[in-house]
Length: 254
Image (cartoon, rainbow, N blue to C red):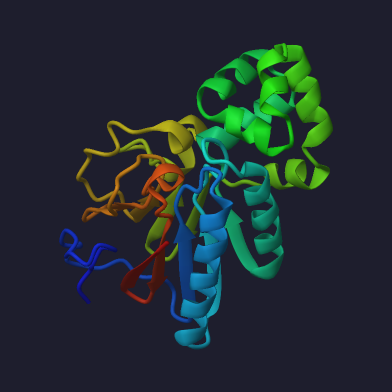
């Protein structure tokens, strides 16, 4: 199988021995959503249609994290993700660095709230119904109280279920990447959620093929040992998923 990116151009060559998922299983992994519920709804419809067209399989859906911030509809994204978690019997989502910070905010951490507002959290706060003028006039304490009142229990409970990594056959799914040379069970959550270098430039065989988001590329970022599928949905309008079955890979994008 040749790998084509969503612009129709040939992607970089894959590894000589292609990674595989277990027979009978089909996996879809979705890149960073960042508050674009419109794109998530559209992409999930594409995944459902693609899954039906390919015939019976045990279908797995994985969201790679950074569901929230930057885009306009983070609260709606979490609603959609909660519904998806009930629709797919094999569903996983990975805690991204933005969810990590949001969890600290919801726990009342004022320093985390200041940081949250600098990295796209303003849009998340507004998506829960805080008016822009009111937001600009609120103290940190008032913002914290507003979020405590506005974020529903279903979202809080969902945010507690995020995983650090998922393994499917020869694939490892993480939000940001791994620390090269460190055994999987010894990886730090901070690296799995925040790392860029030295992971991105490390060409070694990690013992599994890594699929990740976190680092934006306007095209899919395919290498012999990893695949990045954060295509900057919040500003490009392109939310990307990879489909995996046997030793095949294919891409869906809005």
